[in-house]
Every structure is written in structure tokens, then in C-alpha cells.
Length: 259
Image (cartoon, rainbow, N blue to C red; front, side, top):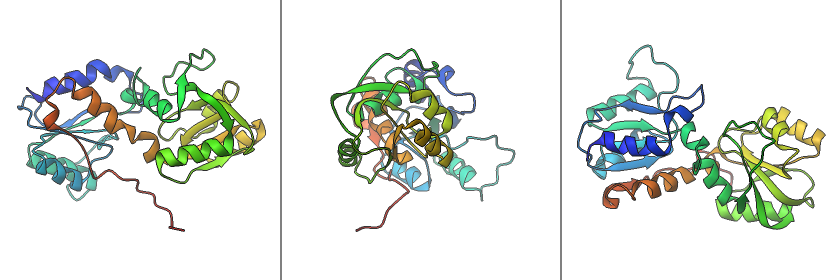
């Protein structure tokens, strides 16, 4: 099997045409006509991930966050980003990014995130069809505090929230990644009891206060860690499962003090 055949599997399910205008999904470096020896799936790529790929005999790394996001005007290998490319090329490893096309696609990362939030998806026509939101209902309504406590157990991290802790939560809007801005709060407040995402700006929280809208903030890592499972489960249906691996080195870069 060639590496390009794996890329075709990914892009059939998650076409690059779905990615946001600002994004840079797709091949970053490498020879796609090489024979596939193994696949390592990761949220981010660094030198440790490349060493992990080598140790597992993987010559294809599938990352969520693109190593090259903005245009490169020079190949200075003292730069951490270009140094990643250097080490991939040196070790004959292809680097491929699957970012917002996976976020936005049907059965993509936002749908996976909604299920993690204990929700059953519903169709909503009031939101612009940008692909970046999902709306669902809880099987059993609960108050905001109890819901936050449930999610803390699921994601194994302390969550921040805004709103009346006794507010009844039935309908949930969510978006994985850094979607905590005013526009998203405004778009979702009329159709959901709570909006869940990461990296909420102060202005977005102040708008939520004005709208009497509930907010739950997870870390960026928590909202997207499902990428590894999502891509793994898709690929093992088409590729020998013995050569597909989820990175064991992915971890949340944010840590709190132990109490």
C-alpha cells in the first residue's frame, strides 16, 4: 500500500474542500509514492512525536494541527517548525495535516465532540451552515453545575463555567477548538441552553452575561483529543490495524496545581 492511498482514504471522508479559508490542511512534506510502513496519529507534531514514529516504524504522521500554518519564506532549521520538516525528511516520514476539514465534515470531530458531551444530535436551521457548530440534546436534563461535574469526569480536567449553576440544561451547542468568541455566543444563544468550547474571550463572556446564557469552557486539548480515536477507527477499516497507532505522547500543555 502506498502512502498516497491512505491520504485518498482520508480525503474521501474529509475532503480538503471543506476546510476553512484560513486553514492549511493536506500534505506538508514527504514522498506520497513511498510504500506505507506505518501510521502515527497525533494532535500536534514535535521532535518527540517524530521519534515515536521512528520507534513504531511509521513513515506517515497524521496530525490535526498543521505544522505549516502560515507561508514559509525561508527554510531556517533553527526555527522549531521548519526543524520538524527537516527531521521528517531526514527520516523519510510523510507529514499530513487533517484540520478543519475534519472539524466540519459530517461524522467529523465536532460530531464526535457532541457525543462526548452526552448529547443526541438534532437538526438546527437557525445557524448559518458554516459546519463549525453542532447542537444536541441531553437524554436527561440536568442543572448546569451537575452537568459540569459530569463533564469533568469525562474529560478528566477542571472546567470553567459561567451562568446560574441551577439553570436547567437540555439543549447543548458546541464547537471544538478555539471557538469562544462573541459571534459564536450570539449565534447559539437562541437555540441552546449552554455553549461549550474553548478559549473564550472576555468580550464573549460579557456578551453571555448580557444574554443570560450559560458557557462551559474546556481546554483546547480536551475538545480535540477525540481526533486520535476518530482517525484511528476510520483507518483500521481500510488499513492493516497492526500498523496504525495513536500517539502515546499527546498531552494537555496546560496544567493546574494539585490541591
